[in-house]
Length: 136
Image (cartoon, rainbow, N blue to C red):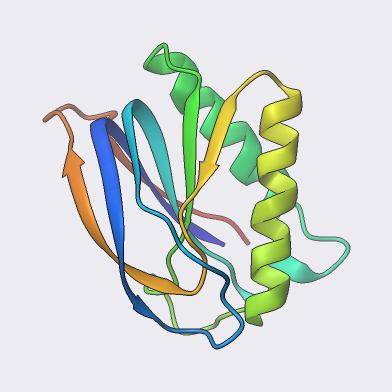
């Protein structure tokens, strides 16, 4: 799993182009003060022994605490590596991670899965505003 975390003073999106035939309807979104996780799920992350989902959850919680926010956005972003998990499995991993974050007291939003999005991001110039993680 590869993740590019952003702390955003504001993040918003507008669905632009559908990329998966089975993608449902997509709605725009807009959130202030949020940690956005741009997540690239790899095929190894789907194995039962993988700890990638847990590491995603722990790192998202850590960064949200650093910025004193409870809002976390999960965004499928398959542009951080060559190896990609099957779309349905990646979607399910992100759904489970979102549920775990909600159970831990966070507010979670998912960007529309299976769409390219027009993004509106306002992020501060701070060392903790952009963090890249790669989990094996």
